[in-house]
Length: 83
Image (cartoon, rainbow, N blue to C red; front, side):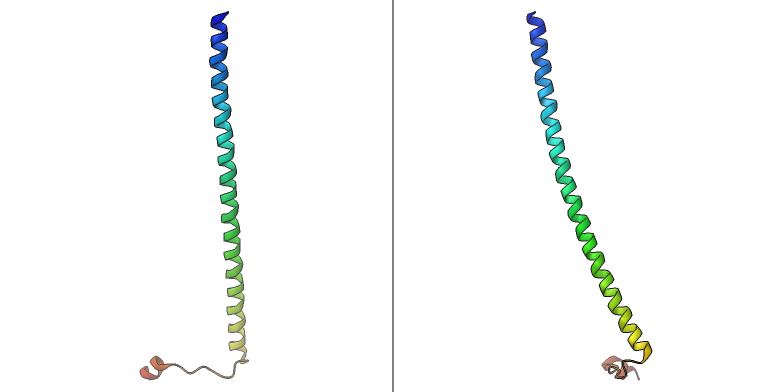
């Protein structure tokens, strides 16, 4: 009977260690999920900013090619130097 009690005590301690390790693993998983979510939010924000910038460039190109911007900027000193 004493041998059985000792074996049960060892098994119980082992199960407690496994349970604690499982809790640590679950907490680490939650931390990783939070990090992933923040990275996804950052990537989405950067993508949104890229789309806004792209649309602004497209609008500017459309205005330039349609003749809406009749006032052309000066060519700048380098272009004047090369002429």
